[in-house]
Length: 92
Image: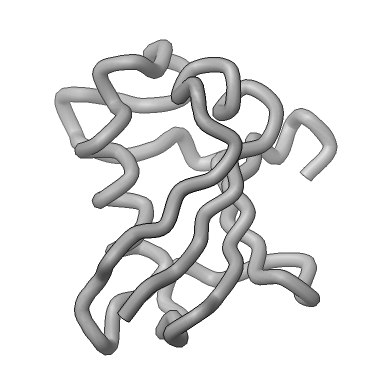
């Protein structure tokens, strides 16, 4: 299935992209998507956003599903979801 991720604020600057469509397996969660994004862009991100050693984003990094204020990392994603990746301290 496919989900569209929009990069806001700092993420847009570091990734060099406004948005990207990711192909992910059915049943993938927000956490799965975060790990995929981290593997793809982690080397471009500063240490206060992505920790290479643990392979995890900082706890203030959040996902939001279009039409919803927040997407819990354990929630299953749906084909066609539009997801916003934000740094919560930046107004997310």
